[in-house]
Length: 113
Image (tube, rainbow, N blue to C red; front, side, top):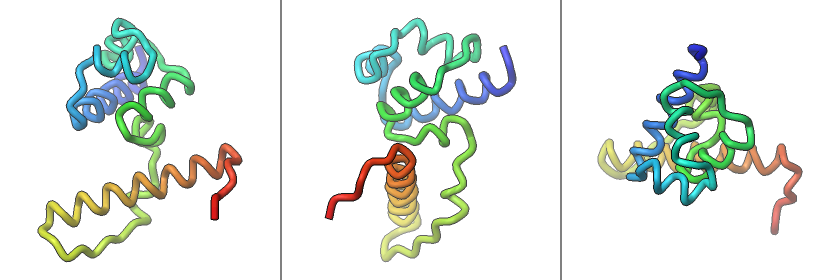
């Protein structure tokens, strides 16, 4: 068990709980068994890139968020006309949308006009 695996597991727990999913729910949406999810969350098992992709998609986050390597947070500045919580929610959504666009670019998915 490496420190990286433990950190990824903790980020996965946070992401899963943020969207109100149980491990069984995450199994259903990601196609990864609940026992494997449990071991990944505990840092007892490394997750492959494909597993991280499926888990991230199911939780509505980016792989980089689970790996702790997302740089978009530092690059997005958002000024909202709502409460602080509303502004933060808008910033979080923008970070996710920009990250998703970056991921699609990396995969070679063409933009639709």
